[in-house]
Length: 185
Image (cartoon, rainbow, N blue to C red; front, side, top):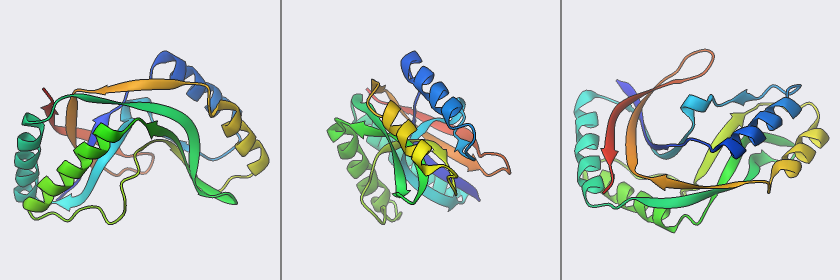
């Protein structure tokens, strides 16, 4: 069994990298598990533990879907968080101008359902996870820092390929292995 998900690889532009570096520096006293640069991705569908036969079906579904899909774009914009204000859990960059992205995810879900996979249990909420935390010591400083960087930058992401990943859980952080790439035309 392999732990599988479908995603878009994200590479931040230099301006966003500077902001992320400054954010990490300002929040260094907090215990935030930051996503490594090489692991940054936008998850389209998490599929969980699958066997080789199921993975073959996913590859077939993705091959068919991507063969008829043109490249598209969306916008990374606005730093924010998930969780309650008293206990934030995830720092992320929001996704804007995502109509084409959302349309692709809907088609992906229908395609996967045709191959016997259930769709997402909740509405798709695209975001780029930057870090996860269980507890914030200084919430006032945390929220002031997020606000300071929340509207500083935006980046257009041009999507030219979809990637099928295997996630290998490790004590420090997960390792993501590319199983197959699917080019959009």
